[in-house]
Length: 79
Image 1 (cartoon, helix red, strand yellow):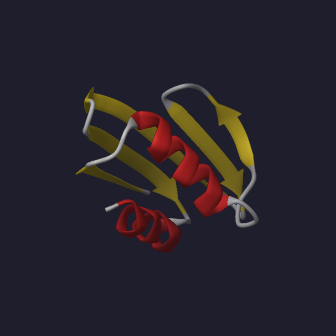
Image 2: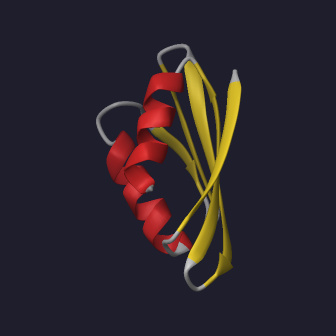
Image 3: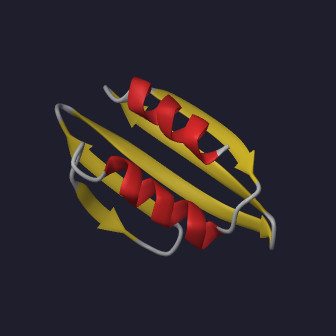
């Protein structure tokens, strides 16, 4: 299991939308809230927590188990 956190220059809403699109067809979305997404499948999970710092900066925290490659690819795509 690993936890990765970055700050991006996007709104919270945009990060949530892009994250859902990124994982679509890869791993099922099992929980969704305004700040969080949880995907589970393949013996593991990805938990994404998004915190808007201001209108142009958002913290993205990704906790994963068995999905490290995809979690890192997501963060690269969000940068």
